[in-house]
Length: 291
Image 1: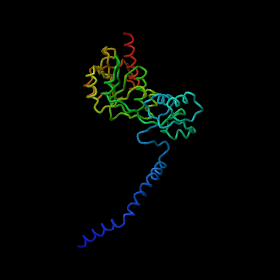
Image 2: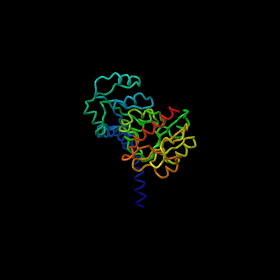
Image 3: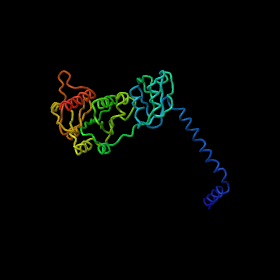
Image 4: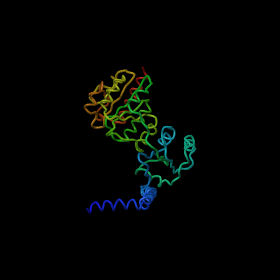
């Protein structure tokens, strides 16, 4: 009998005293803003909302400001009045840049970041997937760069820069073992991240098959292949490159239409992957101009 009495007594108490239970809920709700304020106060300098990051360096910052698809959270500068920056902020209808001392600005960014007195906080771009990219592709001649597990953001950024310089339509890489958007990638890209789509797919072999279905010739850059001058003269080319040292994975090679190499000579038989991408893109662009 005692358990039943306890149950009735507990239930009766809840019905007879509703006041305290109702009063506690507003108290907990009132604590939430205060807790959020304390958490924000405890963040390290430069901490941003989830997913956001800092872009720094003059070229990268001005390119981000010129991109209407880039969601910008705030702008920081340590320099004097900058007419080009002021004009860019006005076009985007953004507030004036926050002024900080140079060392204060450096504290917001990763150690060693070369910011040139400019930085902005932003959200990553909403990049298309491969299927969406192909659906909207309307250029008669197209070159893509495909990267097989290249993890260094500075290398990927430099390749994006070469892609923009030589008119490549996009850069496609893996979802895993590839860098996400970051300040170091954007700085190395020197503005190219804003103009060259950065596509990431889970399965690279399947992505290469999809490119071939869309009439792309997939050309793997490999030191065992023929020279790049032997590349087919097709309107749609995908230049596939592997990580420095490891090169293309076996499955990736098997899904390429041909393997080609740069005409390098001993004792330096290979180049850094970003340099190799620039040379290969130049060779393909020059060949098209000469045809």
